[in-house]
Image (cartoon, rainbow, N blue to C red):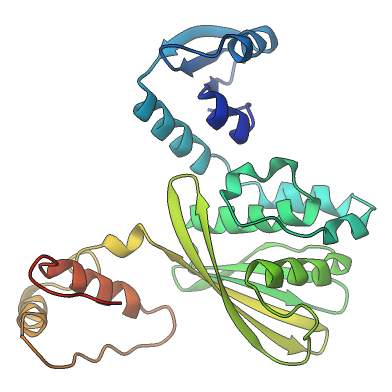
Length: 275
């Protein structure tokens, strides 16, 4: 299933066009649709069915459809590498908003947004952006294993890191010292926090992005792997009126997820919970 309408248009007009493999389309629309937009969509596409839907359900369906669409980071990177006007990529970034609305932005912005969107869709915990002598490498850490997803042209690396620094509110002029920052963004209906670390290397700056999906932080203790006697003892500990629980482990082992799962077990109405 494809969704040929731009996300910004679909969300603004509240029109969701689903296109099947044979080219026929189904249009989901509000019960009182915008006539001009509806006529334009019907003129350009082979719409076989018109399905009215209540406003909240339609908005949720639109966000879910575009948030789980096909990943296209490699296609965007290929398109960017064919754009000769690299100076245009250094335009000032607008305020961080929904990444799915990036279709009309400068190429580097679309490239970085595509990487972040694909990483969130694929369930990656980290993104590693590394420069080499002739190429750059972008790798995702999925289930603890690094997997290369694309090799952008080396000429794009500095612009990509600068764009990332702007989004994370880092000093783009400082290239000799490590820096840390964070980005808060939305991908459809999902809220994602990104922790950004940059580090100088022999061929340029490296960047590591840690993705924290706020929706996934609502896991239960059972879902993070606790069971039996371990679960019973841990629940007894978090039920104590005072004390300290120390959760340790290597990067990406699930410390934060475990703590949020534990906090969700507590009665927020009877406790004062701060994070």
